[in-house]
Image (cartoon, rainbow, N blue to C red):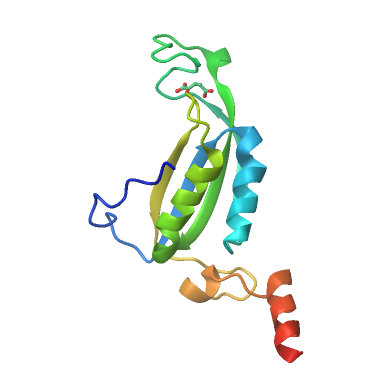
Length: 147
Ligand code: AKG
């Protein structure tokens, strides 16, 4: 399996407690990726329909595009997830596992340091705001612990 080639680098620069993963992937791989993330306990995913091109200039051929125009933009989906530093490599590996076909156009993952997270409802910051509590899974686990 293809894994993030992270062993080679000593850390992220600049270092941060939280990171945003921004992944540009094939639209028909989105549900695959999001269910993979849910299975590993990741809550809180934002998706947007986007259009763009990469090194191929929108062509499916290797080195296909030396010129491109509006109609060479290809539909992709951008997935954004904010996570703790400790979760970064596992999330990158999961996205590769679920989004990869091995063909041109599989997309890219960008890792962006995030200064802080603020939960609007409570004003919580940092770890408290990043953690997904009070959702369905949280209520189910508190029911289980009462039982
Ligand atoms: C690119 O423009 O770099 C591509 O990979 C085009 C092929 C695709 O996204 O399906």
